Every structure is written in C-alpha cells, then in structure tokens.
Image 1 (cartoon, rainbow, N blue to C red):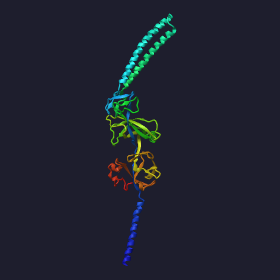
Image 2 (cartoon, rainbow, N blue to C red):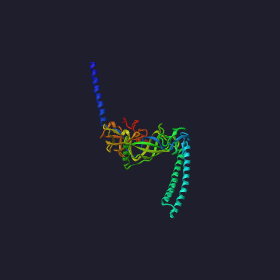
Image 3 (cartoon, one colour):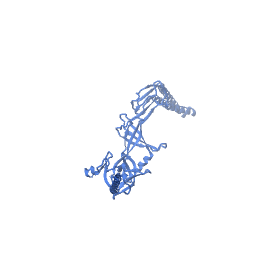
Length: 404
C-alpha cells in the first residue's frame, strides 16, 4: 500500500508541474520579439578599385650601331645614368676618316674641272657668234660644263655621307636614362643595324605602371557614373609594392588603351609615377588603388543586415511604421570592409534589421532597439552611446539578447 501511495503521489506532482509549465509558456508565445535595427544614413564614399600592375620604363631605347666595324672602346659604366648624346662606344674610325679624305679630294678635283669647263663653255659661246666653231662643238662644251657642275654636287653629297659615317663610328645615347649591361666588348665586329642591341637605355624617372581592368568592370563604372549622386573620382593612383609596403609617392592616371584585348577581354590603363630614388624598376609586379568615383549619398550597411536566398538574390529586412518586418530585394555593388555598398533596394531613413532576424520573418511584429555600428563592427544601442544607460540593452556584445 505504501508503494502504491508513493506512486500516486508522484503522478499527482507530475500533473501539477506540467500545468505550471503550460501557464508559463503561453504568455511567451504571445510575446513580441525584440530586434535591433540600424537607421540607413547616406554617406560620402570614394569608390576605389584595386588592380594588378607591372612597372615599365617611360622610355626604352635599344642601342645599335649605324655603321659596321671593329669595336674599339666602351665609354660608359654599366648601370650608370647617361645623358642623351653621350658617346657610349667608339668603332674603329680609320676607314671612315679615309673615306672623308677621299671625298674631299674628289670634290676639290671636281671644282678644278668645273672652272676649266666653264671657261671653255664661255669661249665656245663667243666663237659661235662669229661661226668660229660649229654648233655641235659649242653644245658639247656647254654639256661638259653642266656635267662638271653636277659632279661638284655629287662629290659634296659623298663628302657629307662620309662625314656622317665617321660621326656614326661614335655610338651615342639616343635618350637619357639608366644604361644596362653591354652585349659587346672591345674587339668585337659589329654591323649596321644588327639584330642584337649593344645595350639598352631606360628612362626610370618618371616611370609607368600598366594596369589591367576587365571591360565588364569598365562598363559597370560607366553605368555607375551615369547616376546623379555619383561623380568621377580623381586621377591619383596609390601603389603597393611586392613586399606589401605602400610606395610613398602618388601617381597620376594618364591614359586608357583604345581597344580591348581580344584574348583576355581586358583593357590596359597607364599611370605615371615619380621615381627619383629608383625604387620602382621595370618588370616589377605591383598592386594599384585608383579612386574612380565618389558617391555623395552612398548607402553602406552592415553585411549582417543583408542575406541571400537559395537563388543567390540579396535581400534585407526593414521595419515599417507599424513595427512589422518587411522583406526588400537589394542590389549590392561591392563589399567595403564589413559593409555592403548598396545600389538599390534601401533608402535614407529605412530601419534595417541587423540583429534578431533568425526569430522573425516578413509580417512579424517586433519590438525594436535602435543601434549604431562602431568602427570595430560591434553594434551598440543608440541610447547607450548617448549616455542613457537605462535604455541600453543589458547583453553584450549583441545589442539584443540572443544575438542574430
């Protein structure tokens, strides 16, 4: 009997406890869910683009001989700065000097010949008036004089050519810049306009950085710039070196290629950088940052306030005037740190739900707490920031109990 009495008592206690639990959960079912929202506020945002780039010399000239001969001397130090017009190499000049001397002699001979031919032409012309010579002889004398005059012009041109070739035996720098390794040594035989360059000169200050940007991104930027609140950015370009450090001097965007590369679908952009210390060298890979546009009324919202459905479509929850949740389709342009840059779907003054979304859905009635996002990404109640601690939520780090 005692055993049966004990069993009965346990059953009665279980029934009473179950009744108490039902009484406590029923009010919870009717309780309005508390969520946190952030007021959408437009702000100025500089739309920067990062691109891969390669450093190239602003001027490049391959040094080649314009006459052939034996290389007599190299007159520069490899790697040093040379000025335009500096003599870099000396080709054996003896044969070219001999050609100049020969041309001079030929010219002097032609001048002597023309003097004699001129006198003869004049005499025959006078004699012809008195029929002292035949017309044929007079014509021959005049032709000889004209040929002698032409010979002078021909030998003058030959002398000028010989002098030019003699000057070409001094191989000079076509541009100013840093000269590289010499590919020939004294004693080598070189030929005019040979395939192999004697050396290469590159102008490194200023220096160029060629960047690659897809044609799709360029079209998106143009569409963005067509909007009223968005204006074109500056031409300043920042540079990150291969070791991750930032180059201290700013560059300027100079030009954009006029055609799209058919193999890559990309367009080349070129920036010019000052390079007084020679930090940037041709061939280096770098990363660039270009301010392409400025949005005076950009919508930047926390990433935790934007969701994606199974189809990949972005949406957000906003709270209407009746404190009910509404779903909005939004369009994101890019991620900006821990925020999304929104192009459509949200406007100034919208109450964007940022915490508590897992407990509600479209049409849900909610109790709201306004929050602001700090620089570290933490949500803090607006009342707590203003110093009114009584209105601030008690939980941390989330602004509402239960987090997202």
